[in-house]
Every structure is written in C-alpha cells, then in structure tokens.
Length: 67
Image (cartoon, rainbow, N blue to C red):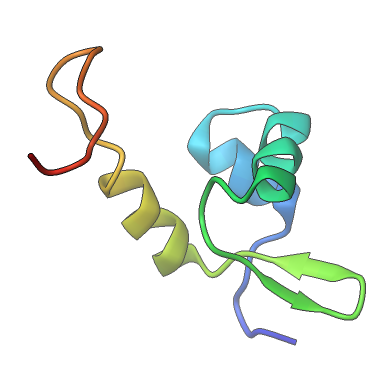
C-alpha cells in the first residue's frame, strides 16, 4: 500500500468535488493519477496537487492544449 496516500473520499474532498464525480473521472481516464492495489484505490497527495495545478485556465474556452 502507498504510504500517506488519500482515499478517493479524501481526494474528492481536497478537490472540492463529489465522490461520485471523482469515481466517474477515474473510469473515463480523467482526473488525477491514482494507485490501485488489488481493489484499493489511493491517491498520492503530490499527484493530486500537481494535477490540480495543471487544470488552471485563463478563459472558459481554454482547453489547456498548447497552440
């Protein structure tokens, strides 16, 4: 198991989204990276923070892709 990792509930709380939203993102391949050991899903806090920083946009039409 990953030491000092967050559960999906803790990661969702940190990101300010619902637990089901985070789970849906995971199924769709979106959201922060996670570690899966058997049936347990955990999020490393640094990975979640890095992913959150990568979501910064300057307008609603900004897709985050470089031109």
